[in-house]
Image 1 (cartoon, rainbow, N blue to C red):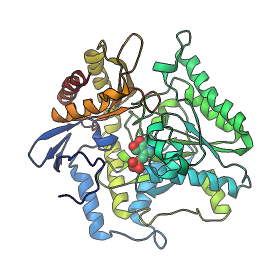
Image 2 (image 1 turned 120 degrees about the vertical axis):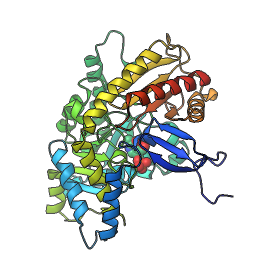
Image 3 (image 1 turned 180 degrees about the vertical axis):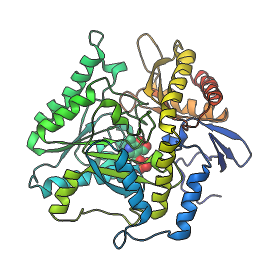
Image 4 (image 1 turned 90 degrees about the vertical axis):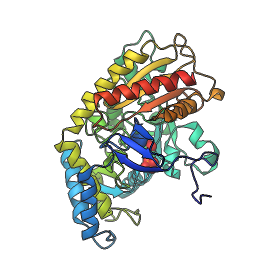
Length: 439
Ligand SMILES: Cc1ncc(COP(=O)(O)O)c(C=O)c1O
């Protein structure tokens, strides 16, 4: 009889006991190919010796020193490394313990920034439908996934949500991808004007939408236009790269491929790569200076911000990504995976769209390829894919509600960057078995 409060009380998951490379093993010895890195976490795979040794030696030297009293060598080193490789303008790093803490800190920093610079009327946040920014109240308010928000409605902040940039479903036949990108971005300007530009503090978006939309990459030019609109109205751009950052899409920061830089960036997941709970919020020098020259104190903090062992893991992970050429490998193996998905599912009667960047790939499932009609949500296609894949020894990340939080099914794939071609073959073979069983 377990005393763990599990995610689902009617399921009893197997006990994971060991991880090695791209595989996890349960107590019975069964191997699972980690085709989604859990939830886009394990970018280095399992059992990476360098990261494990870095954490161990940090624990031997210093496990914890509260940031109310001290800074620490690993935290300083990780901040330096991130800023050396971050998009232009980002200058300061606030280390936290996960993605929700990073997005929550970003929202509060945006608000405090405007108070510090004498624009206290700016308090509104705009985000997008079908995005996910975390499960704490602020982050959940920013997220636009109806299913995750539903029962917490009375607790949530008043955040407005514009439509996502979703070429497969929202680009018109008479539009080029570029024209669609501009039209989709226009929704932000319309919303800023509707809200009153002087009251809006920030726009928050995932460059490539992960969990709730299945590796949904933007149309060309979309984010350039978003950046222009934010600049025009003095609105901060917060990019949530918790899932798509740290090399997952083939560049260290996903927004590099869109040719823009944010005012605030959030990263997590692949930053700690599963070796420690770790996230970070990065902000520009201008934002930091406003705090420094104003109150001098960000009214925020958690006990474990800047945790030395977590920072040591993050430094070892980012060093591994850079020194072992793993970001380029994510791009290359991402293409290899995309080719295999196209070959296997390009004409599949129940696969409507294959999308993504790097080793961040999405498969959108449909009842009818021609009309793009989704499956009846009551059929539970995504959960069935997850179950069938797991039985076959594949971990993938299927989700329902792709279209509007209720309708639509997709499978998210995010294997470790060390994945070999033969493992990509195994992934696609097992996924095909699972999709055929569930549809
Ligand atoms: C884009 C994005 N932001 C934030 C989060 C929340 O991160 P965490 O679960 O570490 O709190 C997630 C988690 O899936 C995410 O995908």
